[in-house]
Length: 337
Image 1 (cartoon, rainbow, N blue to C red):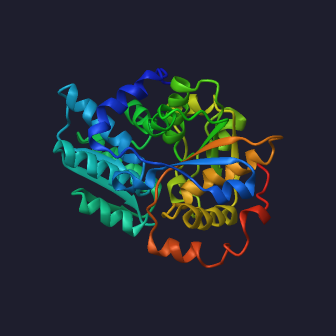
Image 2: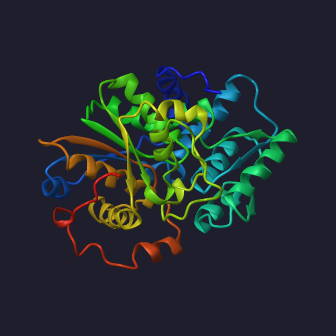
């Protein structure tokens, strides 16, 4: 059943609510990159956010909204591939509610340790599917499920990053964000409808984790049996939700990015903007470039960089091959599938 859609003003309300608890993250540009590619890429860098990722925006908006209503739960439970885990742990600590987080065994050890450091109880499961199932069990026992994307307050909170970028006066020709469960992309779409309704919003997704792109093409939600194998750990979700799919269907399109392209842009973005960039963020840049290559004149593109938390083992994969020897002006990104 399709959920009732949020009005775009929910994003502005969320930003007012969470502003005292978050960082207003910067917009970065690389003069060299823009010169090489002939377009202006503007990056909203959520690696400078609390917990190092955008996820804290949604988690805070949900729990602060419950607090406003006088309806804070006795405990919170969540499942995650890593960044949502840290976000829930951080947000729960702000409002004084205990949190239990279920993480699959293939999740980042760094993110797991950070989640524990923020005060949450962490349970490691064999798979993503098991994490979701055990979370449902704890929910049935009375814990409040703070879902990573199937929650209106979360969606509105995630949209506050794009809201900040557009509130600064930026009016790009296109906006790109990576899709995992669809919360980040749905919130980005809502913020755009509020402040720049004529601007097209595109999703980007790992080709090896392309359930959302398949869903977009077929008009029905495609679900994986277990976590897809991609370096972009933030996109290892099993499926989008009916709540997020209603917004994803309104996007201008999806770009699907192969693993080598993700790693290429993970290396180059970190080099050019001088801050760690998660592979999940690099997916959006690869999609933005594929779109820009099809344009007949220079364009400005807002690229939403979701976070900067990278596990040591992921660094080994990312830097196993040196892609910095091939500059972006000599590198041809694959066309979208």
